[in-house]
Image (cartoon, rainbow, N blue to C red; front, side, top):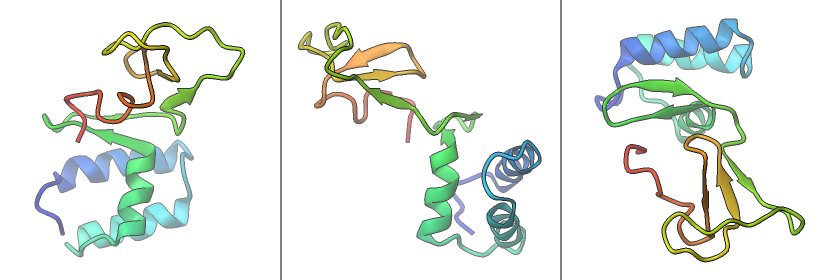
Length: 112
């Protein structure tokens, strides 16, 4: 098992998501079994988990929707990018800010 994650907290989050019917029950069961047996998760399992959760450096884990960044349509108002002031292309619903194509990736310093 990867030592960079807190197995206890990870299991708690997965159990809550499983019982809330977020994601696929069988996939969660497989991931839980591997974590409890201290087996490494494969890339697909890690990707599945991270697509439904967001992990911060301070070990606080929060659930998030699959729609984390919304691409603005040609009809949407395009406020300036938070970093450079150019027209934004994306809206981030986690911190209520707008970003251009260049700054949407890696804009949150707490995100791993």
